[in-house]
Amino acid sequence: MRQEKKQVIGIIATKGVNRPATKQDPFPGRTATFREISRLARLEGVSVAVFSPWSIDQKRKQVRAHIYVPGKGWMKSAIPLPRVIYNRVANRRMEARPRVQRLLRWLKSEGVVVFNPRFLDKWEVYACLQADPEIKPHVPETVLYENFRQLLHCLREWRTVYSKPRRGSLGSGIAVIRLTADGTVVIKRNSADVGTQITRLRHPAALRRWTARYLRPERVCLQKGIKMATAAGRRFDIRALVQKDETGTWRFTGAAARLAGHGQITTHVPRGGRRMSLDKALHAVWRDGAKVKRIKADLAALTQNAAQSLETALADNFGEFSLDVGVDNAGRLWIFEMNAKPFRFDEPKIRYEAYRRLVGFSKHLAE
Image (cartoon, rainbow, N blue to C red; front, side):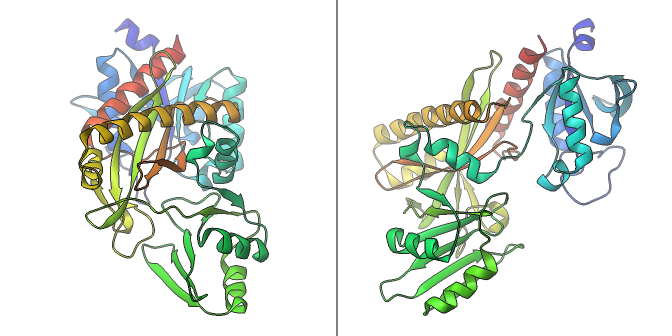
């Protein structure tokens, strides 16, 4: 019991979905995750305290936290400011609020270790990865959008271009722009909901008008399209998780495949994507077990190295990254995305290992 009092993992969080908080669901959309982490942490002799940015008393250096007690549910308690805090603020807009930013700076000034300190900007991620000579061959060529002429050049050079908002999430606003053999430009764009807009343009003037409407200079990345392998007749990518372990070393935690929905340009499940085990997806492409084993080993090594490279370049303290990784028909791996605030994995084994590593790394930071 004395160890439990001594070691506390703080989780600063906000609601993950737009519904009212209740006593037994204090962080809608995230409560189940925090409950699972709390249960596992108790087995390790650690207490988990979950609190919102508005529950911190800077004057007293205390937090009014939610603590999960088996058999009783979530209980509120005022506790001293934890030494280690895991940042799970739900979205970019909330994290960007001046009050939240001031609070994060204050925590740092008090010597609190806040890991996963912020959401990432896609362009800074691509710029860092492309600067690493070992990682660069696994990153599709990517540029920061400047003007219409640049888009035309990329289309002529690559034939297929993905445009991605620098600070987008869940695939919203992503478009795939293809130049066909007869000169027609076909565009599929993810709308804010789960729909996909399809546009066919035959004249440069029409493409210019589309570009002026949807692409903002310095706010969008243009990425070379990669022809990916397919499973069950559908494109798939790999969602991988890498985390720091109890020694602070980057480790590959696990990965699973996500198949694109019919007519969709991304593999997000809310957009019709479908989950599949990594082994099943890879064996649907290659019957050679040795090749599948080699691809999985390469995936683990690549994602660990990318995590280390990105953290070093950003000079900040991260504890986990999720990666969207593609694989082409030759078995070559491509990093499409890296995120510092991974969504909960649906695969139980990966989720359990993720929480175990999270607790171990937090204990390491608290020592």
